[in-house]
Length: 300
Image (tube, rainbow, N blue to C red; front, side, top):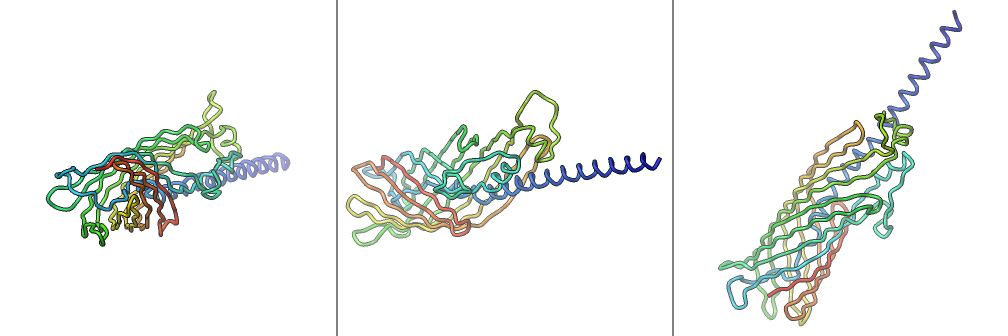
């Protein structure tokens, strides 16, 4: 009788310990995923505003000879930390590559776009629009889809003369949405992350991460045309409202955050008649992220 009681107690202790261990593993894994949502919400605004700046602080009036407008393409990028996602992958024996030149914990958030800017009328202002869509397969082991668009308007406080530069103040709205997908090994999720995997023929379970952000930015920028070059420098402040969520097996989580930020940017364009080639860089004082942009446009 004593042996039976001891056996039952031992089995109870075993299953209790096993259940606790599985719960701890799952909490650690999902905790890393929740941290990743926080990283997305904090750093996504940097990707939203990468690019979208033209060397000319003010392009002139639409109504005139010639009318002032421009259209072009650009490709911006910013540093995007993924250490928390890498920690979750490492727990179950998987790995996510990074390029290294951005740091071991980061990948580039790429933002190619079509841009249009038109001059104002009567008052010295101009307005711009930007649209971007991207789909990447196996981008550093991740599948990424990305959509963004923006609108901004700038008012010229000082218009360029032989001596004076253009100086503007402006307001902009930027929107980004998309998703990140990564396939985990189903057996590893069960053994090393404590998930109960539904019976199926699938050998993988998909992690799906959705994200979006709205960024409202104010800026000041100056520029000066010097022969075939136009150097420029700007400073911005922004308020961002971000939301992201993850879904994997039977677990899901949504996180909403709001952030204030500030960044400095600058660069120059090479001007060849009506064609302008633009190079710029930026740095965010709050997140520590940096990025760059290259663009080409036709501009009158």
